[in-house]
Image 1 (cartoon, rainbow, N blue to C red):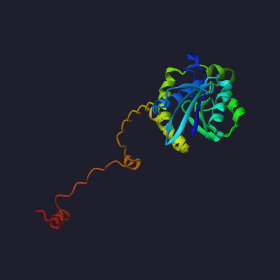
Image 2 (tube, helix red, strand yellow):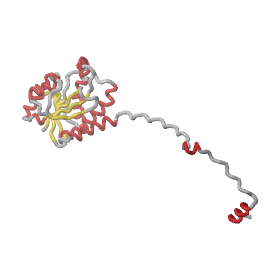
Image 3 (tube, rainbow, N blue to C red):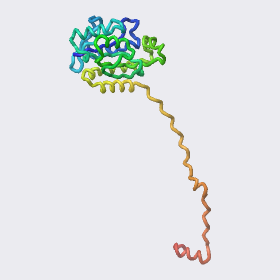
Image 4 (cartoon, one colour):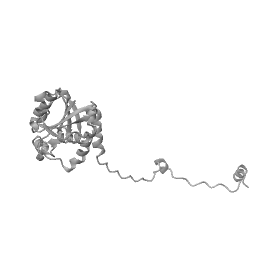
Length: 239
C-alpha cells in the first residue's frame, strides 16, 4: 500500500493557483483510474484505488499548505506506513514551467508544505516536483504561486496533468525515469512546431576564376590547299 499526497490550499479561491498544482495532479490520477469518490478523513480528502497492482490512497490535505504535515502524518500513522511509502506532488518555482523532477529526501527548498511534512515524518519520502517557473525576483514569489495559471499556461499544464494521470502507475512500480520521460514527451509533443524557414534562392553556378580568366579562344581555320591540306585529307579520308 502506498500514500500519494497532492499539496494545495482548500477552497474555490485557491483552486486554480499555481500553488495548487499538487491537488490538480491528485485529481488527474483519481479521474484517470476511476478511484473512489473523495471523502473527508485525516484532516483532508482521500480517494482510494489501485495503480500497477498496488493499493493507493490519495490524499489532499485541507489544513492549508503550511500545515500539510498534520494531515499526511495522521494518514501514515493510521495505515502504519513508513515515510518511504509516501509520494508527494507539489509546485516547484526553481523548475521551468512544465518540467518535472523526482527525488527522495533532501531539503524543503523554501516550500512550506514540504517543510511541514518534514517536521512530522522526516524527509525520507519521494517528491514529485512540478515546475511552475520563477517570477524573477524574490519579492514576487508569493504573488506568483498564489496567482492563477494563465491561458498560456494551460497549453502545457493540461497535457502534463493528463500524462501524470496516465502514467502514475509507473511511480507505483518504481520506474521514476520512465515516468519523467513520458511527461517530458507529453509536454514537448504539445509545443507548437517551429515555422519552416523559407527556401533560399539558388544562384546560377559561377564559373571558376580560372575559366573566367581564360576565355575561349576562336577555333583556328584549317588550310584548304597546299601540302598540309593534302596530308589532312589523306589522314582523315576526305576527298
